[in-house]
Amino acid sequence: MSAAIVARRFALNVLLVDEQPAPGGQIWRNIEAVAGTPRAEILGKAYVEGLSTLRQFRASGAAYEPGTQVWQIESGPRVFMSGNNAASSVEAGAVLLATGAQERPLPFRGWTLPGVMTVGAAQITLKTAGQIPQDPVWIAGSGPLPLLYATQLLNAGGQIAGFLDTTPQGNFLSAMPKLAAAAFWAPSDLLKGASWLAKLRRRVRYVANVTEIEAIGDQTVEMLRYVTANGAAATVDARLLLVHEGLVPTIHPTLALGCRHRWAEEQESFSPELDAWGQTSEPNVFVAGDGAGIGGATAACLRGEIAALRIVANAGLLGSEEADRMAKPIRARLKKALAARPFLDTLYRPRRSIFVPSDETIACRCEEVHVAQIRAEAKKGSRPGPNQIKAFTRAGMGPCQGRQCNYTIAHVLAQEEGRDAPDVGLYRVRPPFKPVTVNELASLNSKDTSQ
Amino acid sequence: MFIDGMPVIAEADETVATVLLRQAELWARTTPVSETRRAPYCMMGVCFDCLAIVDGIVVQACLAPVRDGMTIERQLGRRSVAS
Image (tube, rainbow over all chains, first blue to last red; front, top):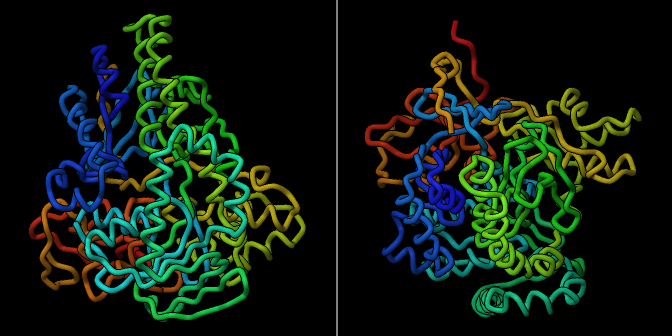
């Protein structure tokens, strides 16, 4: 949205294609409907702040296609998309991918049971439908989001049966050297986080240093077993379990496009290689937002503005030097917005067991391939990569196209083969990025809209 | 709207998945491999566990805005090619 707003100031033709039914991404999801209602109070100030960006976007004159999924981008760039059971394509001068992030895959025994959801999923449910869990809910995870959601849930009158903090013991100590920079540049964010945690610990059963979780049940989750760092184990009743181990950039479209990616060790994830304007290794394809690297909402908007300036300059609507000049203060604000990242990334670095889970854990949810099968293939000695594993076991062949298992496969192979996960790499991703029906393909009718 | 023939109330702007989560049976489908129940997991379109048949077409329930009179059927097991 921020990129569209900037681009429109220079009268560039802008089309925003959105898979969701309304603008806002995940952070400001459904904000137009929620603003001004009691739900906005529950969700908090950072959510409500998105409204001004949203209004500017609506007023900008950018074309907006909701409920539409992009499934292929060819060089040109030409973008293929589907909405309302019809496919279409658009030729563009440039494409900006602002596809955000997803929650890090966090396999554990029982994670596929109905009633196990991510914390983000519960928050989306609150934002879209004003719905909270009926029964006291268990939350297990690490990161700012579980703390934020727990706070929102309590504000909404929900109940938390227990909060299992899986942040590894010792992370805080490792993060201490980075605390000063974070505290200097983003003191209010840190104080906010600290107050959420303090409130949680006062009001809710809080267990620290949880090293292992398991969801148990027949057709749905019925019990939760957890183990703490000192070896103590407990099993509790649970009807709903919310889990979260941080975010990873959405790299699906950039992988499919063949963009180069880099491994961000501090965030334990791949992100696309980008120049100073957010351009990928593919000409005229840009990335902004959490898809460029996890940075939060403020950084996302600023990255969008910077990319837009370059795109506008490339289109001949703004001088290159002028673009540089305008970008300078935005870059300064971006640096400030990212200042707390090193501290947060270190503090919330996940425990190893979610990368290399136990044998009985399902690695590929779609095809129900267990970690044991992956290890068995790796032990055969031919040092398979992810694409061989896909061929041998079907892991990665399901509808999610590896979004929930790519990192798991990479880490398990890395462990078995004595390599690093970034060396092993990820599955080759091929378009369509999202399912397309034959009917939709048949209805393809290319609009020659020059951007 | 209807879930497997049973009428349910939905509110404007919500998705099929949020409606499913309110039902006693919150699962959307059974898997093709082992016919095990799956319910919505990510609610944002990246896990595909909420696949259900909405007005005759298989879609991600978490991305399908509700409509009056919509019919939703849980997807059971593997798809088969109609003879």
